Each structure stands twice: as C-alpha cells, then as structure tokens.
Image (tube, rainbow, N blue to C red; front, side):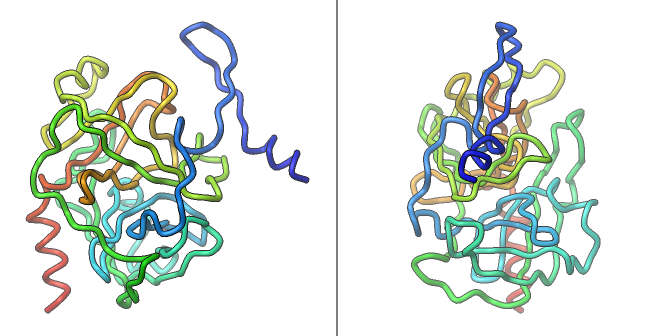
Length: 257
C-alpha cells in the first residue's frame, strides 16, 4: 500500500530546458517538513472538505488569503467553504465555519492584469480559541529589504488533480527586486503591490500553494498569488501585505463593531 501511495505522489514533468523527464514530489518544491506548532497562523481553506488554498490567521476571527481562490468561484454565504487550523497535518486540523468573504474591490482575475489586488479576507463564524498551535500573525507595515530570506509554508500540489501534501511544508527563499522579477515575465507587469522571490530552478511554490503566507521576522509580508509552475526557473509572485494594510484594517475593524 505504501508503494502505491508513493507512486501516486510522484509525477513526471517534461523539463523543457533539456527535453528529459524529471521527478517532482507534490509539495513546495525544494521545501522541508514543518514542525508541529511552527506555523500557528497557517490555515487550510477547504471547499466541500477538499483543500483548495492556504491562508494566514490575522486575528482570532479573520483569515487573509488570495482572492483568486474564492472570489467569483464560491457564492455567498460560502456554506461549502471552511477554514482549518491548529495542525500541520491536514487530517488533524480544527474546522471553522465561514461567515463571509470580502474580496478586495480592485481585484482583477487573470494573468493579463497580473492578478491585481489578489487579496481576500475571510471572516469566521466564531472566534477561534488561540493556543500554541493556532494563533494570529502580525502584519508587516514596511517592505522587506531586497536579498533577505523569507519563509513560505503550504500544502501545495503540482496540478489540480493531485493530492495535497499530507503534512505542511516550509521553504526559505530570498526577496528579489521587482525590476529583476520583471525580466522573467515579458507579457505580464509586475506591480508595486507585489513581491517576488527567487532562489533557482528546482526551488519554489507550486499549484495548491495559492494563499500561502510569506513571513519575515515574524510578520506576514505576502500572500502567494502566482507563478509559472512549478519551480521551473521563474520567480514566485506574492501580494504585498503592507500595500493593502488600510483595506485589511477596515474589514477587520468593522467586524469588531
């Protein structure tokens, strides 16, 4: 049985650089397993109990994620959508019902517009009980210096029909300048509201990592938005959290009234 499962979690991908077939596992490419309670802010967003994206717990009732995971895809009141917290194992997490979803008003779907304002805030039906295994992360209020290493964590897949990684993965990557990032993407504009990370080919985010939190110095700096999957030698692009801090505060504070 273990052999069958192992076969299912490995795929063959054509390496366009040399025409050979390469093996890639279905997780953050080049990442490592996370430790229990290492990322207490990590959230699994699920549709009909199927993991679709990640998110970050930013209060005891709010989750920040990518708009393209939800907006225009899941109808209000989002009864089929739920958030899971408290464990690195997808099967051991705590389930939370969703009250509503606020998509950024400037969000534009699609690569031609570079997934503009790819940000959504999910309000949970009830407050979570914070603990060592589930607690909010602070928001960054300034940019990360170029060259600094940041951490992404997620349960990524390789394609839409693959299974998510059972246990949370983590990956350390450096921030690169937006103008350098732009040289890799000729037909898409890298926006000032975005952050790029890039190490090298074979290291990076993958499908299923959408909405995953990017963290620097204990603060949330980005939400994974898009890339050319998976780790094929192109930067990963994130929504820059501090750029949208006013929108985030407006939504979360209005829910407290």
